[in-house]
Image 1 (cartoon, rainbow, N blue to C red):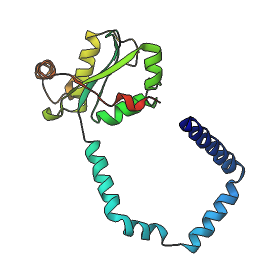
Image 2 (cartoon, helix red, strand yellow; image 1 turned 90 degrees about the vertical axis):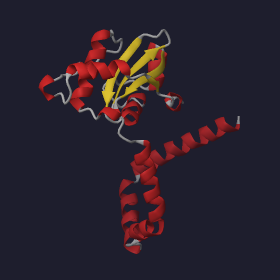
Image 3 (spheres, rainbow, N blue to C red; image 1 turned 90 degrees about the horizontal axis):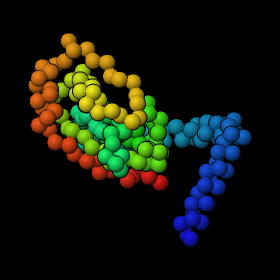
Image 4 (spheres, rainbow, N blue to C red; image 1 turned 60 degrees about the horizontal axis):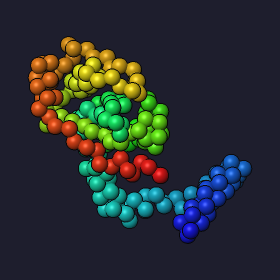
Length: 189
């Protein structure tokens, strides 16, 4: 009960803030301008005062979002292939997909409701130092083996831009095991 009340209060506050901003844009700009004149070094001082924390947070973010060359697959609860993609930054890409900020234009919740999304699996090829063309080749290879339910433009592969031979790419594809993306739940409300 308390959570529902808190949620309603927060929602009303957001609505009011939006309404206030829309109806008082000039006033807000003027107030900010006046405040900035009174506090000209605020941002510089804030940075100097919090420099260690800011740098620590930036390092943590970079470590969390390290390069992860991957080919990934969205699977339904019936183990059907919903979508196949590739990315050099897997976590960022999956976050974009799950928030509806990608070419498939569906949030994780919508994919669960409409297609029965149950998990996302991926193969990590980071150790092989693949080019973007190599990842596209592996994505295309997987798309040719499976019939995706959520269709997207196919990837265009320029085979002369591959950094490795096709045979080698298929060999590492077959020997690399799938892993499960274990943060899917965070995208559900």
